[in-house]
Image: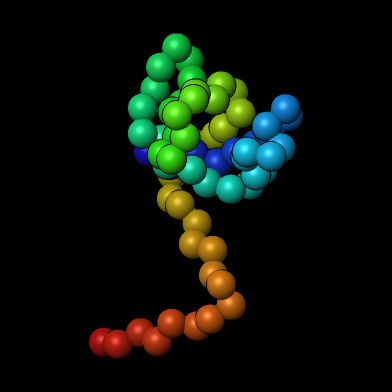
Length: 64
């Protein structure tokens, strides 16, 4: 499951508002995010139906 951060209050140095994170587990009304050991309150996130792709400025060639 992919979630998007909508609130990083008290977590500014850890979470970025608007960034998407992969959930590795759910526990005690918290999401455990891939790469993090502690849980973050579910209220800080919204579920993403289709993850967005962030481009680095390079255009990939599509071969058909």
